[in-house]
Amino acid sequence: MKKSNLLLALAATGLLAGLIACKKETKTETIYVDNTPPPPPPTLYTRLGGVSAITLVVDKFINNCATNAFIGARFAPAAANPDRLQVLRFNLIDQICAGSGGPCQYKGRTMVQSHTGMNITNPEFDTLVVQLVKAMTTYSVPTKEQNDLAAILLPMRTDIVGK
Ligand code: HEM
Image (cartoon, rainbow, N blue to C red; front, side, top):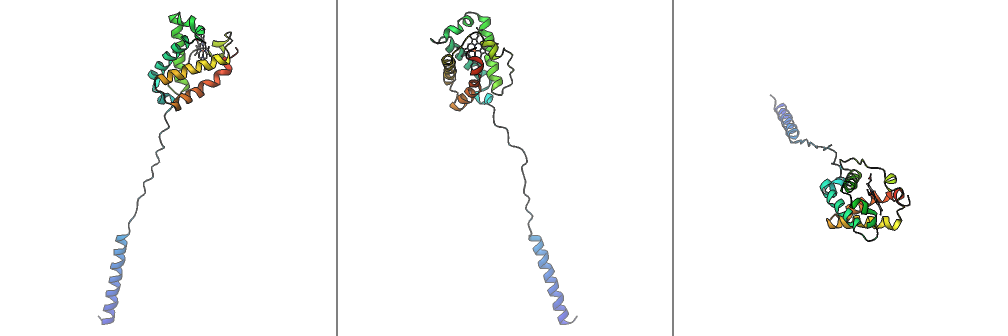
């Protein structure tokens, strides 16, 4: 082989080797995309602590209402009748459980049906809501959850007051 051809061959081999080296060094980066949707935020029901926590709050709430100087008399018939009290208790638990996104189903009468003929006033309604807030505070329900539950119940005012 002529000297010039030898040099050419060596140069070509070197170039090839360099290309192979370059190719070897090329890194492929795999990007893993997590397509899993984020978990849904916990329901108010969960944040309240589920049906056991709701039951504690409802029992305290009923007691607060029945012993309140302004609205207590409204609840005297129920307080004096264990069966009637249980109906009110279970319906309130189901109502709050279902309304906050829990697995319960409210089976009681509508708010209009159950309060018609009582002529409940706005101050009485506000007093009842305060009794619920007090009950939640007793069981250390955080302010955010208190407000979230109040936001569910407050719109019921128009179905309850003045009927
Ligand atoms: C957001 C407010 C309120 C809610 C969520 C609520 C909820 C309920 C529920 C679930 C019942 C039972 C319904 C049934 O038996 O089928 C009930 C009954 C009753 N509610 Fe209300 N209520 C509210 C406001 C008030 C107010 C302001 C008063 C009076 C101050 C009141 C007095 C009563 C009474 C006396 C009964 C019947 C209890 C009995 O059997 O003697 N409620 N309410």
